[in-house]
Length: 114
Length: 116
Image 1 (cartoon, each protein chain N blue to C red):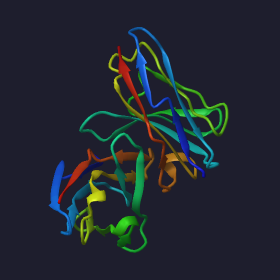
Image 2: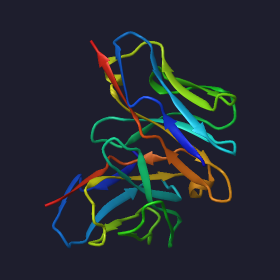
Image 3: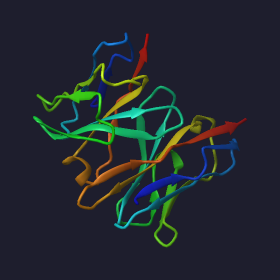
Image 4: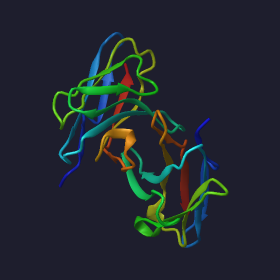
């Protein structure tokens, strides 16, 4: 079965400290991977995407993610959290097979402590 | 600025009523999508369209209907057959022909539907 798992439903960090949001996927095919951010009562905004080029992907707002095929992971990181980073984050997998499919993770809510 | 416009932002429905959610995009994207988001869950695909006058069922199409008469517009009707319609509905679009491309999606700001 093909799936995407966000390992933490809620992450809380202090302002200025690193952020790590974890995402693992399961796929028999080479996927395309995305991270989106959603602020309350808003749509999703693309942070970054991986499509089989460089394994370390840089996105907007200082976020980056590393694709690790051996670990089937695509964790999102940021060196220093800002209060404006508080939001819901979604890991998304696009799978290519006879029935192409888009799978959203269940989301990780990021809280920032002052 | 180009983007996706969903209206209304909040919508209330009485039992047994059909309601239609609007989604318009001026990005010249071929593919459009409708998702449903429930608290604490990821997005679930209702319908998508890769081209005008064509659309495909997603994972949870029962109780919903769509049309794609114009490239810019992809309205979603929540019918009375949908027994639990209260949710946040998101419309998206992408370059390329839907899930077969690896292009990211652009999202509207959503419509929150509630039952009176």
